[in-house]
Amino acid sequence: MNKKLIISLAVVLCVAVVGVFGYGAVKDMLIKKDPVNYLLYSTTKSNHSAVDASFSGKFDLDKEAMTSNMMMLSADPEAMATFVTSLVNNLTVDGKVVYKLDGKNAAFHFYESMNLNYAGKPLIDLALGMDQEQLVIKSNTLYDKGFVMTKTELFDLMKEQEGLDLNKIEIQKYIDVLSLENDPNYKALAKDVKGYETIVRAFLAGLEKGDAVTVTLDDGTNVKCDSLKMTVTYDQMIDLYIDLMNEARNDDKLKVLVKSKIVELLNLALSSGDYELMGFEKAEVESAITEFDTNFETEWNAGIDEAIAMYQDVKDQMSSTLVTDINYDVTIAIDKKYQIRQMTYTLDTMGVKMAQTITFNAFDGDVAIEALSTPENSISIFALSEDEDLAAETGYDIMDQGLTNIIEGEALTTLMTDLKTYSEVLPADEKEGIVGLAEYFFENKDMLKSLIMMNLGY
Image 1: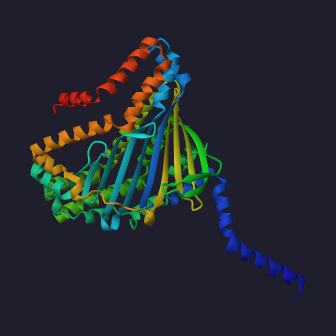
Image 2: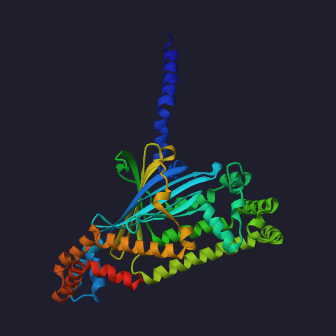
């Protein structure tokens, strides 16, 4: 066979092999070469209809920095800083967030729980959940039942108090109006986001590739990830918001989209007659449509200018009151599918460090949705508003159970024990006062509960 032909066939074969097996590696190399490109590409892969995430946070006070803040509080500021730091660094927060959105079927689910802990033991908890049918508030610490308001009850209450009959409104048609998938104005906007991208890229200029990390999910699964890191200041974050709002202020395509959607919603309320169920007069809706048609840009500019002024004022006030900048150390972990799996923020200012970690455990079809409440473990908020005796009885039960759970709980017991232990470093008179407080707590738990309930009117 001709030598040149053999070489040509070999080249073609190599190109084919690289095309089939090497494209992924080449694409990865190109994307990951630039940390900013890597992050921006990953955000496009993190647009999920359902997410299960957990979060945790903790304090890390710097004893040396705290000493100067204790000058007015103790005869021995260093000892007081040691005492305060030992206690505060035992405080942690953790929780969970689960959401799922199905716009086509007007269905959604949201659940968030949060626990405040001391030395790893729960001090108090709170959970909030909602879907298209109900709102649920619950705290296992305070009460053994949750509090529920259904959509029907809320609309009935609004009808009773405001005369608005929202039960008859078909919500789905308004959700359909807000759908952007096939909206030509949205498509035009999506094709012209260079201004926003330039601003974000400038903000992310300090982003760097970090070490490989392993993220542990709630179910114990370990996910190997790349990490990206950067440090930003509070002022830089405020400047980012202001720059983006200035870009939006002059974005004609965004203005066209927002205006069209508002006018379309108003026209739908007008044509369907829903404005009457919402408590409006026909003339009011027609006037609003005319107002948006003629004065939208003026109102748009005024609203954004007001928001920019507010952010600038906050920035100026923070700059004038803080001795040092507020710095945020940010770490983002990204898995092999370009999904953001974890984000860690560490705030550091004047000796106070606060760290928060958000871990994304599952996405889309892998997200498990649990029932927010059942009739046997919940109380109707509407029923409480209608029945004073039930409200008084429930209020008493909440205080009774809540105070018992907190006062007798491991977290507060450990905290009071630590007050005695950590106070050993303090001057004698300061130590005596703190030890006395802790001992009074242990000796008078029952009386404390009764005293608190009495002062609250129970």
